[in-house]
Amino acid sequence: MKLLAKYNRVNIVTTILIFIAGSIAFYFVLYYVLTDQLDRGLRVEQQEIVNYVNKNNALPEIHSTKHQWMEFSQTNVAIKDPEPHYGQAYNILEQEKEVVRQLTFTTPVNGLLYRITVNQSVTESEDLLELIIMLTMGMIALVLISNYLVNRKVVNKLWEPFYATINNIRNHKLAAQEPLHLPSSHIEEIDLLNDSINKMTSRIHRDYINLRTFTENASHEMQTPLAVIRSKTENLLQDTEGQEKTMKQLLAIESAAMKLSRLHQSLLLLTKLENRQFQLNEEVNLEMMLREKLEEKETLIAARSLALQTYTTEVILSFHHHLAEILLNNLISNVIRYTPEYGNVTISLDQQSLSVSNTAAGDPLDNEKIFQRFYKAEQSSEGTGLGLSIVKEICALAGFRFSYKYDQGEHHFLINFS
Image (cartoon, rainbow, N blue to C red; front, top):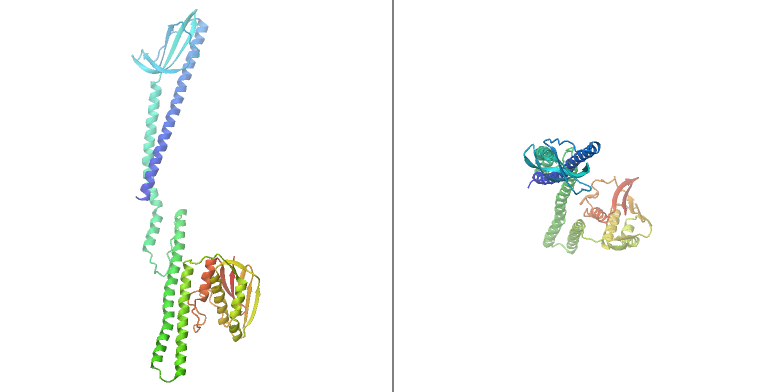
């Protein structure tokens, strides 16, 4: 069922129920008003008769009309507190019985007690009530028909931007160069929908491009060490010139195999990070772990004659122990690898952030590419190009903010914990 049909169905049923309830209430209010008006007229007639009797000591002449007539008769029973009520009376002029609103009371005249009944025909009131009800029902029918036609016309017009959005989504190709862009419709709800879809499709498009680039780069990066393994193995099988050359080829094979293994582990870790497969509920002493990592890297630091400065305070985080080790290892290894010999490395850790800076070997890094997968500042590097990407994903999972800037010949990497 279309939304418009469902809306019209609910709208018509609701409107009918409201009109029925309103009509019933209107009927009883109108009935009360007309009855009250008849009662007032009867009270006025009673008072006029009593005043006439008191003044003339005689009953007034009977003047019957089509809608009102009186009846006089002697009685021995006085009526106390007379009240108007409905009844039936014979209308002499119309020669038929009618439903009337009547008031019966007694009054003394020349020592005799008379019973006086004033009859007020309700035919006129009933005709007026029926006319009003018919007009009301006609208005209800007119409103329902008009409401249906207007809704069908106006609502269809209002839904045009929605159907335009549907058509744009249907016709959009994920492989297109640009993400889907839905224009403003000048309708707040549709614009909110379009804006949400624009943001969602932008993320999907970006993820698609990243996935495609990642797949292409991964294929290329994996193929290179595999080609080395195959080439060196073939050479090894054909080599007959001596043990030393064989050893070099074996070392080359080992190096390529290790790179392929690291690449595989990194890709597997990235997949787990993207799938949110880690629970960050372990208590991690980041300062102690940082010092342990620096001790492990002492040989590399000394081999490159790097000047290391550390400024740390105790920092306890609710984190994941293994991820914390990977984060620190990748960040420190990256800095050591790309710092020129005799360069400076400065590491600062406090409750708010972890900062790592090092002497730059060249120009500033590309802020838009530095955290991309397989990006290498130096293409000849033996790294996988996934180190900073993994750091970025870990920070995103933990709710940290990872950023880079270049200042006065130094690279600065900053992780904000809040």
